[in-house]
Length: 48
Image 1 (cartoon, one colour):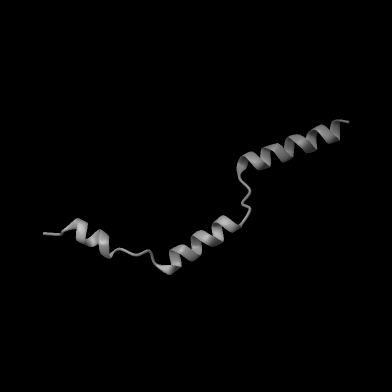
Image 2 (tube, one colour; image 1 turned 135 degrees about the horizontal axis):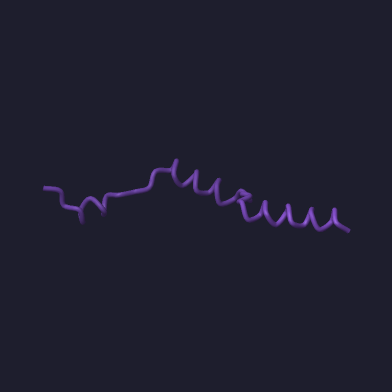
């Protein structure tokens, strides 16, 4: 039977995952709400 407590003690994140997390957090990712805000701003500027 697997001893989960022992297995958790052995667990270490792989460097690849940590590197990927760092890369994602450093990037300024645009999401849909950012795009909507930009479109609204442009629409208001075009109206004026």
